[in-house]
Length: 472
Image (cartoon, rainbow, N blue to C red; front, top):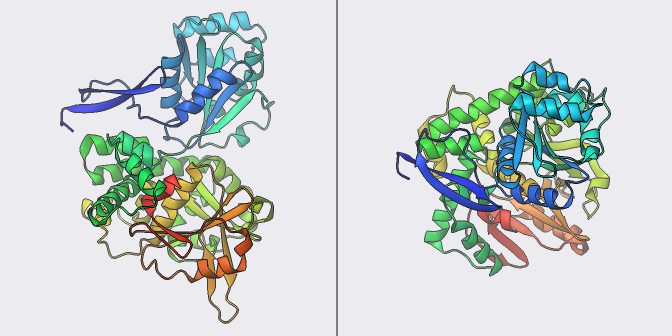
């Protein structure tokens, strides 16, 4: 890309377009193509008469950007109320919403924006910061004059709504970091995703040269991750050390916000210790690795709050792996992953003030002498979650030794299950998968070994390169 130009993606009536403009000539954030845009369109066309839309997700994941871009493209006018940065007069409007004629008159006057009945939308950004505004949604939706979009993020929504009436007139959707296909779109690659889909559909290997290129591109995604700020930094600088600085800013922001749901700092310690826990191949998250002496009862409320923040993903142990795993999960036995693999990589190398380009370059070329298995496991968790899967894993003891067999992930299809074993090294050895499939043979539909080699189908097992996971 030309150093003086940036490719800016915009939506026009639901279709993606882009334009090249000079650096510094764009006011606001880069708007990347996001799949969630279709969910917003579905809400507008089918649900907006009866429901406000609540977009939930971690901070810096792009909620505000996509909400405003959608409002700009799909409505005649819109008002954005950012409750993290809004004047006192607007906040006071929500003290009394009994007279909505007066409320809307004042709102238009204070924002300098005209509202049109049935053709305007009002965005409540970071709505958890003003519970009264969220409570008012019930009456605003019933009034019917305008549409409403809410965004909520890291600070626990639950803790900020204990004294208000939660509106039932909300259609909730979740927003996650940019998935691999969205990442490819962002860097201007409209070919690779379609190539991978075609290879997987036809069960064909890529071939040595193409596979090496596809793996290198996927490792780039693993290092940068799916946070828009990190991707934008990469496009601006083409420097992975600068990307690491951007990611550290996000991690610092999360850890500051964790103190708002846990003043003891334990939530931040749990988050920081995620890479260390995974690297030790333990069959569960060990709380004492985060803070010495921590017991399970100390985090009974804390883990759900962290999950509500969308900064972590959780995989529960499936005590009885089957189509109804959620009914028999072990809520006290789980593994934790960061919601974004790029942030995971930054946490893994947090022992330095910053991660040098040389480390990133070695990771990119797969030459760093470190166990990358836990990084691949983390990105697979992220990709499965983005596809709508709840995460489960399974362990069992060997009948003849003290060895523990483990299936990294289990997904369900109809009444059947699909075990997934993630490998970063020798993919030919998969004893855990073999033992699991023998034990639960009648429940199995598809079996996968996710690895770093090319595609292969052998003895009923699909050996798929990690870059194919988003498309299975």
